[in-house]
Amino acid sequence: MKKPVIDWDTCIGCGSCVELCPEVFELRDEKAYVTAPEKCDSCNCQEAADICPVEAITIVES
Ligand code: SF4
Image (cartoon, rainbow, N blue to C red):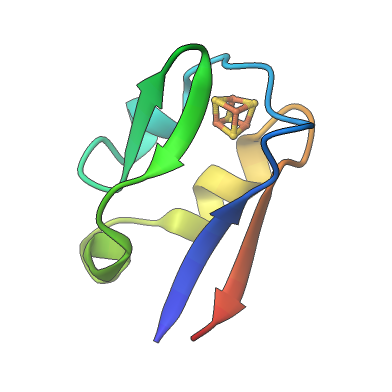
């Protein structure tokens, strides 16, 4: 299964990934968290990784 991993040192809390995949990502204290990696199947987490302005999202095989 593929899942997104967030580099919190890099994330600037812009919220773009949350807007694109609200079931997968959540913003807390201006950092994005992956709350439901299994929902990646029903959204496009790769696109979320692609639009992240600071490339803080990596898609990994788990
Ligand atoms: S798109 Fe990137 S910088 Fe923006 S909240 Fe998500 S992980 Fe952070």
